[in-house]
Image (cartoon, rainbow, N blue to C red; front, side, top):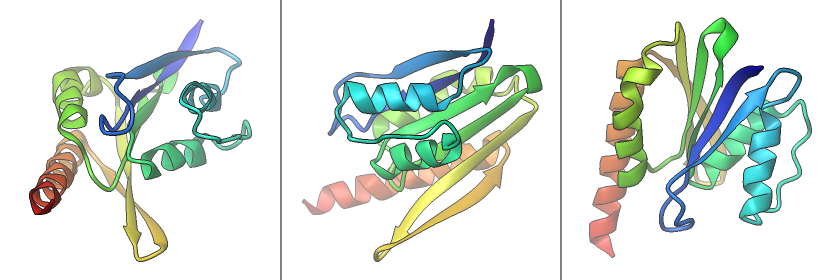
Length: 146
């Protein structure tokens, strides 16, 4: 029986595939999906079963927007990279109605200042969407500098 899912929307400048999704069955860890993504694209991670949160953050650190769900308890947790690409924002917007069906909606926002990594937590679909838009504009602004 399915207990949840992991979805990863890669940074299109690194990985051409539009999305990576994997259902998580009863008795499985979300880490399995993150490990399969790492193995498929040769990212070099070796996640432990107890690193579900850390795996999501590690993937976001590389620039890949991702989320995981726990369907039986109505939880969805997003992991936002420091820059959100157009494809990632479009995916979020196209699936927003599905996200609204979860009772607990939160996100971990990855920030890197100098060499220090910070994560902030936010809650609610509207706040998450605002952060996605803000991080997308930030990446567009940097894109014009090239």
